[in-house]
Image (tube, rainbow over all chains, first blue to last red; front, side, top):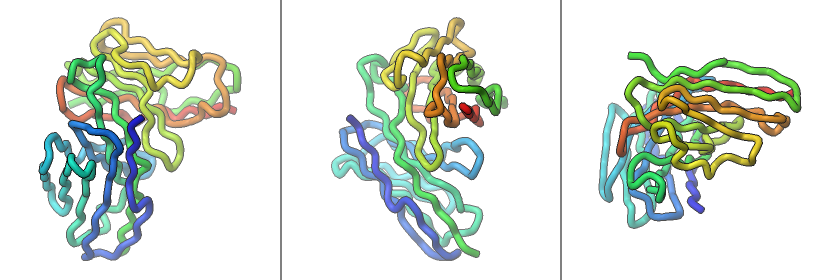
Length: 117
Length: 113
């Protein structure tokens, strides 16, 4: 059974600081996704990571993937209040049903991030 | 463009009743997914459709839960004999083929009294 663990689960930080959220998963996977969720809202796709060593950046967020360590990180640079949200990582395993295509995702519990002005 | 649409946005019903939740995916997306999310948790996978067929229903918790997608577009999640533990936000997502991200709807908040 695939397990996805995020840490920390809660993080309060000040604007201007840097921090990293970690996502570990238990089984070899070929796809990892990061999503953002604002309170009472649905999930917004941030990054798709498909290969070992993949690095994606958008604004103050940067995500990376190490498939050998089964670890992904989401790094926040010079945080601003607008980045306050819950961040989820999610892992896909190709099932025998899909033939290597789209599959259901296993999500972590999420990291609830509060950035204080 | 139009995103994933889910109706109703909220549903309150009594224990033991039957409910149907509807999902209208992004036009052209062949893959459709149902998840449910409890407070403070990540979404939990329920079922995945590729076209009209359920490609993976391993996440459905028991036989009270059933989903259909008869024409390969709109999907309905059906829950029979609802229980209080079924209360959650039910999320639908769709994606294009391959490794494209799943795009989520706003969800249906289901409350079983």
